[in-house]
Amino acid sequence: MVEVTIEAVKARAFEVPTDRPEADGTMSWDSTTLVLVEIAAGDKSGIGYTYSDRSIVALIAEKLTSIVRGKDALAPQAVWSAMQPAVRNLGREGLAATAISAVDTALYDLKARLLDVPLVQLLGSYRTAVPIYGSGGFTTYSDSELADQLGGWVSDDGCKHVKMKVGSEPDLDPHRVRVVSRAIGERAALFIDANGAYSVKQALQLADVFGQHGVKWFEEPVSSDDLEGLCAVRARTPAGMDVAAGEYAYTTDYVRVMLGSGAVDVQQADITRCGGVTGFLQIASLCEAHHIDLSGHCAPALHLHAACAAPRLRHLEWFHDHVRIEQMLFDGAPTPRNGAIRPDLSRPGNGLIFKDADAARYAI
Image 1 (cartoon, rainbow, N blue to C red):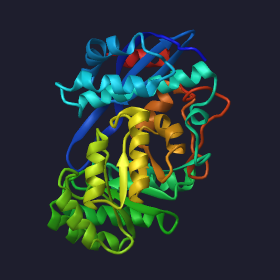
Image 2 (tube, one colour):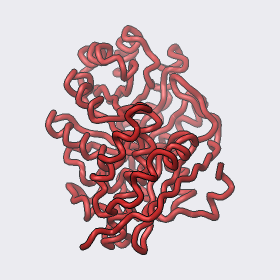
Image 3 (cartoon, rainbow, N blue to C red):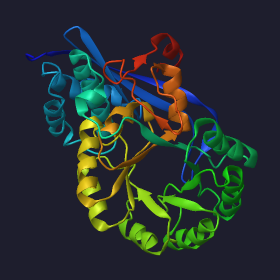
């Protein structure tokens, strides 16, 4: 196929209120912002997005659009490489990385649509379905809300793992963990996420308590920037309890250092932060080289096809906020069956169609 020139790039932001107050170990929020990118070439348009801040709409328009426009829509990796030096003086991490992630995911969707194939067939796949774990259990929830939400993922969606937030009030966390443990029983494994709220000593003390209630996954027990602290926790957690981190990895360099330090049992990566499909698959290769499993963080509809193409993928986070938004704003958002989600091979690209009319009320 001959080169197909990218003609237009458009970015828009949408802010969706949460369905109830939410908090984790280190912050609280009442809305989530989705930044949508649309890229046109030939007679097709591709879409991608990130969960970030509205300010990156201007960043995309002023820093990235001129680089992307005119490039070959069939060579997303080359476009990704061209965007990297454009944000050098801004800093490649943080907002710039989320902007590049949104553009990159739109580029891959566009290429697959131009070739009229599902994205998973373009990327190649190791699996036809991706296991998910239900994720929410915010520290603002009552005991009954906790039990109902996490128990529902097990009974209704067939999830074999569910995750709750801890860390806002450490003294209450053992009680909250007991509540969920009773609600799910032996039907699923319990994960917890402290979002870096604990000190090393707190994390170690609580890990022993949590282990008594069947906790199998301890995410960001301390800050993910504290690799020595993560190593200290990982070395002393109970047998059968994995330490996970990496959702704030914006570059492959960050992941290379994290894996090299021995800080995690499972490496996390977020396609909306780590450089899109290109960055996510680079991280997947690093995990393969280090013999460490990869877990996708949030944005399940956007991760789905790339997750099928990652060799050591363990599972994908079925995060309450993002699931709700993706089902509200996109036709084609996946639905779980027996604890897994599957690409729809009857739809080209990532299989998603943005619902402009439904999204208009959230436009900012």
